[in-house]
Length: 110
Image (cartoon, rainbow, N blue to C red; front, side, top):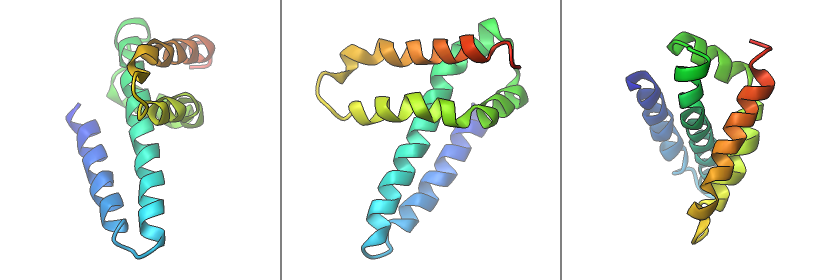
């Protein structure tokens, strides 16, 4: 947990510094922070499956997230974006369903 939050904090600080670049920095920092938040959210949604069903330690979790990064981002980026809308919390079960589906389709690969 500490390692994951430390990584998130480190990259957030770098992205915020990038935001000070005129014109491009604001847009680029928004997009990078959006992706970083989506990765963190996807990992958090997968955590119950890592612990209970897949029984993965932290190194195995990191390898899994690295291997399936595009799939994790694929379902969590839209969820983070929709999260900006009022009432979006009503659809948060779909995010968990995306994580469950990812585990189902990749469990045999690992």
